[in-house]
Length: 622
Ligand code: ADP
Ligand code: MG
Image 1: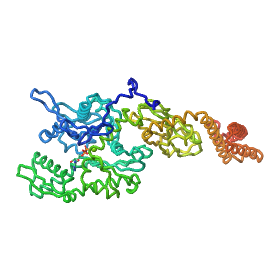
Image 2 (image 1 turned 45 degrees about the horizontal axis):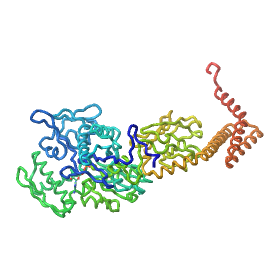
Image 3 (image 1 turned 90 degrees about the vertical axis):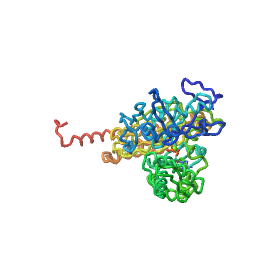
Image 4 (image 1 turned 180 degrees about the vertical axis):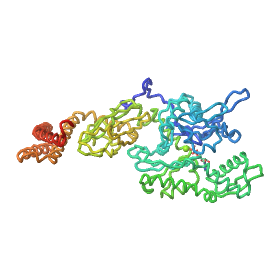
């Protein structure tokens, strides 16, 4: 749809030329790059045909004393020999200070506690996690450029759903350092859901169970009309395939009555354990064998034995799942589907345990260590404007206005459509009733004047407003849309500073046709909408007037004679009637008459108020 094909400033849109865009899963253990080729998302292999790149960077000095670095498998192979200069699992340090790094004392690195973010001293100097991550990203970028023989237009990079701003910013910085144009950061569980095509019409709650090398993440996603909302996340930052390797290695050593005392032996037995573990995901039995300094270690294992050994670890992950469900007040049987992510979910024991817990068969059709990258690749392709179906949205401007519901079911537009993102706009609101302590905020998207014709995005409540007279509270509602299309809405009462907020993904799930319809309806009904809006506003004004009069009568009705009272009651009845008629002029004049007819009463009330305030005080005190 032509209307939405708005390109970034300075970039001339050329709809016929494909733009090469990739998705990158920047993982703790492994990283991958994926792209849509001939309509299908796939992970791109290196020259040796391997799609996985170990997230490892080794810094070293060559014979001339010049610094070099190796990345991926080559770096990993040197880890045992050169642990201080071989940085693995750097994702755990992104955007973190030394104090945030658990187990820092047990890691082989020389940490430098730099302001803002921890760094590691290597032979090549002090390296920040951003630089190390940039090496991994640059390697994948190179792989993609070699594959396509073309410069990259941009990349979607995935991050854990629980990553905070500092961690997200660090990821973006690393991408920039690697020469990548970040189209968007995407939450890993959302990427997995996209890979499974859940953005195409699926509704309901989905769980994403991600058991990787060193971490376990559980996320609950709510899908409605294609909008992904991360309802809850949790997990265990020290639970993953590595723990399984340790358990298996210890078991094998105990069986053979051997031990692995040297660092070299420890690594060797862990590598053998991992190989055996992975084999047992496809085979019923396997041999764990390796040469240690004390002799050959050789133990035979069955899949059942492995399942028994890892049961406590799997149970630990399920305990995290239970906690997240409980916190989100969701029952396991409300979850419609479970997506399995992470290499460790290839283990049949994990699949069975998770399936049993939720009472359904987990989704495992896609390769669990590729699924995040694949989803990111699909999203990158859409953002680059290559979608053949033409149902993509370019998110560099807001496609539809964002606003909120005000009295009378009207929409107050806060950010008009086509505003370039990121952007932030605020507007002040106030309370409608005396003593009102809560305010309902209803966030909507669309061009129409009435709430029921717009798309409802989110609702939340601001509670704890101190009771004040109607109109005295100052509630600032701020709409903020970040470069990743993330809308956050915050409502804050300015005097008491009570605050509430919500985050939504506004543009997901609306395809061009839907946006076109919403825009068309907005334009063609503009005049009718304006009339309707005027009437609704008049109604709100009338209600406000009625409410104020009722309050005044309740408080100071005794100031009025029976006649005066009857007159006011009649005027109020007039307003009430006209409200129902839906005639704009009639309603406006009735409201005006009521305002006029209560002027004397208002003056009497004010006098009484002053008398009360002055009662018992001398002139000096005033
Ligand atoms: P991360 O997201 O943390 O980077 P991955 O999702 O790539 O990690 O998972 C890596 C883990 O998956 C490793 O512990 C690896 O041993 C494990 N793994 C990979 N393949 C298999 C398999 N076939 N069976 C069991 N575990 C596997
Ligand atoms: Mg992962």
